[in-house]
Length: 185
Length: 153
Image (cartoon, rainbow over all chains, first blue to last red; front, side, top):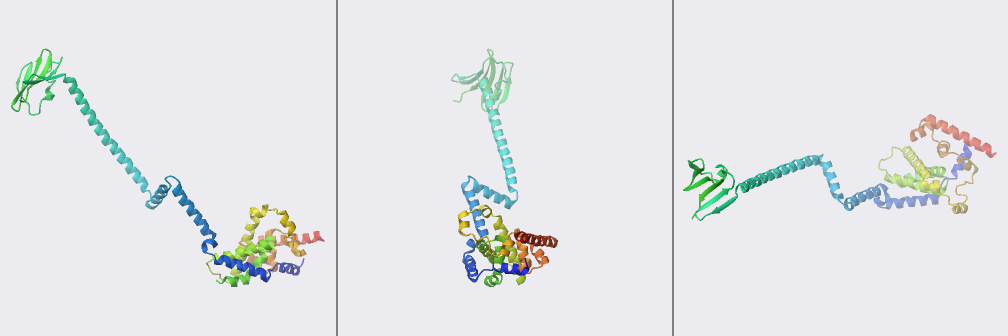
């Protein structure tokens, strides 16, 4: 095979005028179309954008995920700080709740103690009497005295207190301890 | 950048190259059109007409390689169509038939060197391949063409 023969053979592949015109018209047609149609990259980008949008809308919490992702990218780990803040505030809330509960427990205990001691309460028309059965202790009912009470007389089985204008007594009688205070008329 | 001017300047070269690669006129037309469509997207101006031609040759070669690799082309066997158009992939020219016996890359190399008049160093620069590799390929192409001719005789 000579180079001349090769050139002549390849010459036969040269497109004729009609083929060239046909190809150019096809290229021109593509060129005249909008960039969106002509440029496949735009189409690909549009498809990806649409897929992201669908993911954001269709998947539960998807849009929130997208927003969180955007915020975390924009703020650089502020999510971690906010999470820490949330944990701290949750702990504080728990601590406050624990205090409240403790107070409640203590007050409940006090009530229980008072209930245990207050075995009987009655009045005879002139005096109000609080009595603890089976206890001989002058200090057993001392907690029921008001703060301003001051002791004015004390014996082995009784004590007298001055509360304002009134005279209150704590007395041991027949194996019981009584607090006796005059009724307000 | 005037597309029409560039097209008229290089369409023959690009079409022939595509034909040599793909071995049929319809695919060659498609590949030629696609090559010039790529030109529409290109924004940077060419340094010279030679640069322009080299860019188009590389672009067309890549497109043809992609088309050859495409699964549809490699798998298709449309018997009826082949029967109706027997001459499509079988050139009447004996020399061309011998050329088509070569591997894809060797055919391209023979075309660029013996028809377009490119030198080995120019093709090496265009393709980013070592000159010695191209020289050995060209020698192999020459050898294969000679062998084929001997077999035919």
